[in-house]
Image (cartoon, rainbow, N blue to C red):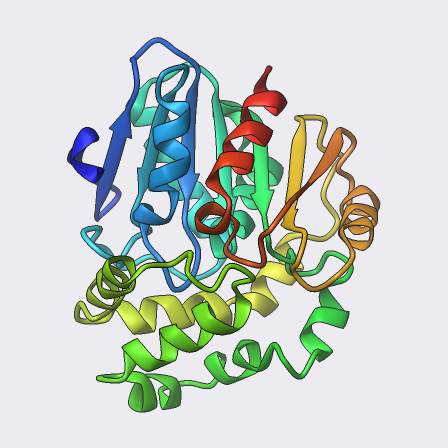
Length: 281
């Protein structure tokens, strides 16, 4: 089904970004940002459900899949790149949607570079420095936050073993265990087996201390934010909402997606697309 979309490469700030798009230009634009350990295809089914009404776009984050470039792992730097991408695309104000690490980047766009966006959606992630962040970091089941922050060792242990590593996250964090199919898993392994891609991904985690600093002391944000979690994911959505409001998000709504754990875009793309459509309406 991915061949129903148009693919192009966009040269930008010493990077080469792989952009995938569908729908009709001139309709309200949506940009999707994937998380770890995935690529743009995580949003395939969601985009297919929205493309008749919206101009849907997704990218591979820099250094992953078909996107090339050396960008720091901190989310403010990645958000600055997204801001430059939206400037180059010259679209009407965009709704930005991010899952996992992509949600952290979307939040940074909202707080630091909001000039090209009209709404933001954050899916299934904690925001560095925003409650309940410290509680999340203390959770022993979120072991990879600390492990990936170690220099060099994760690359040494993961190189050549990305399939069992990624399968662990998919099998553990999905409520719908059949949601991420074999072809998608193969695609993700290929996307992160590019030279340097694992370091790019681990740098997202190594940058968390900088992200915490960047997310504090900010002026209030009035642009609407929709925060989404899977109904079967760990943590209470009320705690995440309270932390976002405390951090200055003035216009916040929330949604729980049924029959879904962490990987909402693939576990229940039907309800996710409905939630995004309702938020934009």
